[in-house]
Length: 225
Image 1 (tube, helix red, strand yellow):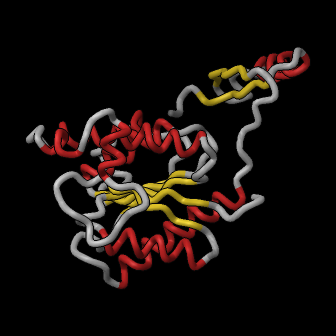
Image 2: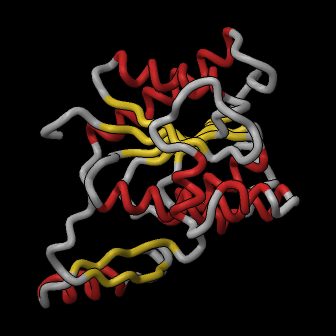
């Protein structure tokens, strides 16, 4: 990259301030930038995030007081997810962020899944979650290139295990931002579902025929996600 990567760090700053700030320090110690987006609703964070929950609410076309007044955690987080998606997409379109790192329990993970699913293929995205890779997450909620790590030992404050997990997550998304080759869009893309070559050997001839006509065939396995 021609500049230092900038990572958007998403989480509830009122309940997870120490963890968010720790990951921000890990990223900035490597010469990159970390911007924190607060998606909490009721609490007041002990620091000033780069993007407040009021900014997130405004991106959803409302205000944080109105979201809190909904009186239902699911409804409130759904609205915050809407704002987080809109704000993140705006930052990405303006080339202000290069990757996303989200931290959450079950509710925070649900919000993070909405955000990561909205982002284009090729933008590094990682979620550290207490429910990572569990049956609580339907496969169709997962972005194709999403990385997930289990937030082991992190339910009540930062400990040695938690530091190890969070620092690895910060390094993983930062490394991805430094080395990623984003999909080029120079040619029209044709998505094709298929089985393996031994089963559908005609795919080889079909793909080359499309390429000769100026298309980029992208073949994916029909048994996968």
